[in-house]
Image 1 (tube, rainbow, N blue to C red):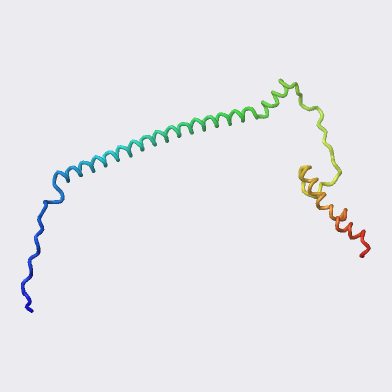
Image 2 (image 1 turned 90 degrees about the horizontal axis):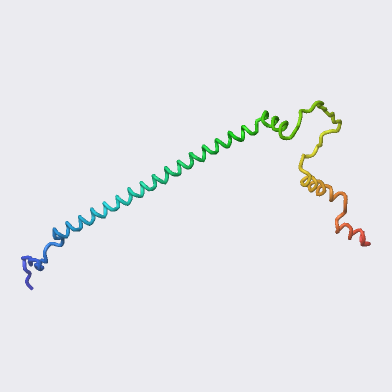
Amino acid sequence: MATLDRLVPPAVLPSEGPAWKPRRAIAVAIIAAAAIALLQVFQSSGLVNTGETLQRLEREQAERQARIHGLEAEVAALASLDRVERQARERLGMIPARNIVYLDVAAEAPTGPLLPRPYGEQAAPQAASPAQEPSLLQKLLSITPFD
């Protein structure tokens, strides 16, 4: 067998023309530019809307803060001791006490915790109940002759 020393030229395919025609490239560029421009318009309008909402909320917050300060000032004015004393005399007909009596209590201070009655009554019987009354099991065992 004989070998050829020359290379076979490549087969030439029929050319259909360039893949991108200039008109198609220009149309794609214009569409891309329009899409980018629309995106920027939407973003900027959203930003403006958010800014207006933020300003409205800050204005409302400032109004409410001013109202809170006004109410605090009104509470302070209404709670002053001079005003309370004047109202007690004028509206309620009260007068200052003439005789002030101090009582000396000779009883010792309580040793346990100072709790309101419902809590104090619940805590005391629970601690004292096992020592005072025998349980049901102890009562049953005392009845049986198995000592």
